[in-house]
Length: 195
Image (tube, rainbow, N blue to C red; front, side, top):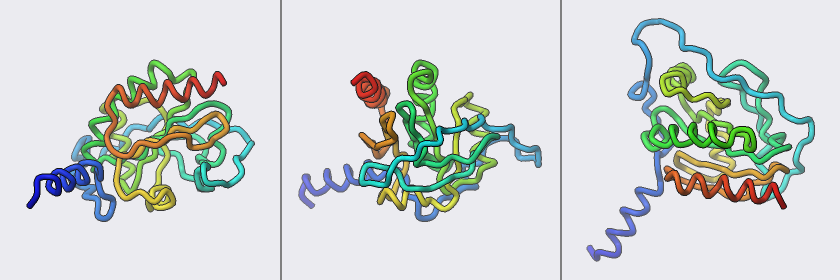
């Protein structure tokens, strides 16, 4: 097999991240093996009433339940300030690896940029334990059926979407982010907010 073809196949496999066809939720469970309830996840915020008109650069008109307390999250109402949306799951290794980077970025930029995690096709209880164990304190919504991923036409996780203050998707990253790539997305969002 030519070296270029092997390299291309390896690159495609790495970029695919975690496929969402048949997640192995039980393999990624965290927290006690007892029937103890998972701690609550961070609360979701009340979003502005304004909705973004549908378009190629808008998120689909989906409303997802909050993983923690708080209102459901209407994706077409992520307006008012720049937003970083990260689609992830506890059964996805690259998702678990990048989560501390997202938390660090949230600690540095959470006043200027809204952070929202979307737990995709996962066990909400496992997600709550994971967030608690790793000190993740930004809000998360639940996409039990993977509707957002399907609407975006993406097959794997993690996925990070950068939305401007008007709620339009201005950038997306598929696969695990490095700290430099994440900071680049945030810097671009902050610059777009100054324009």
